[in-house]
Image (cartoon, rainbow, N blue to C red):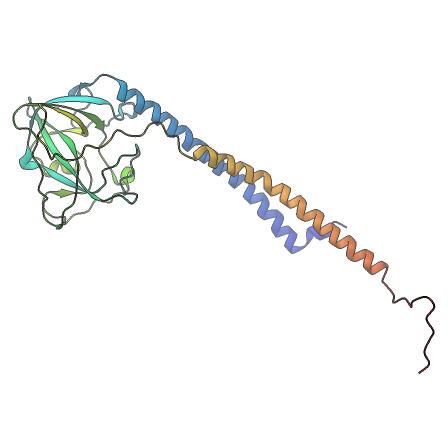
Length: 282
């Protein structure tokens, strides 16, 4: 009765199920690892935002690779802004969801204003002063309200140098004057005449207080949401369990159909004449 399992159709179906099950198990663990990564990142960001600010020079230096534990670390720096070498980073939105994705998500795409802050020792750190609208001419350098002149103290969130892999933004040449794609102390060093500390500061506040019409500050990253990854992991594992269940259901259905066909073949129905009928001579 079960010899039909060796048919081409059932062999292919069984092999497909055997391939799908471990694949879906691995996809479930992949989503679980993404969930764990998100939770760990949220803890790091929350701890960094709650900690008291430290001097930026104590955390980073030229050419440094910022550790993951310093993600969004609160830092301060004192110096003066060098607006003559200010640049804007393209393809940016005003929002900040705590990820490294700067693709937009339907929001208006504009610029981030990147201004070097010159420290007392002559080195500089890049400061992302916030978001501005692109204006009507994307090839022209936009009009930007300047920061306070003279000595200022800046508080911000420390971010690592951007790369294409972390942002999804491809660096390219041939851009309009003073426009960049990636905020990076190494890539942007060609625009700056000073030695740059690794990474950049995402502006939170300036002392003394700046005037009106400043770039819109980038909001604090979301570190409360854990995303849908755990739900996706559970779904993949449920799908894995459904494969053998579905296989058994199809097997039972096939067996029932074959039994019904055999019974019909062994006991063919013959036409029956109604009782009391009289044969009619032709």
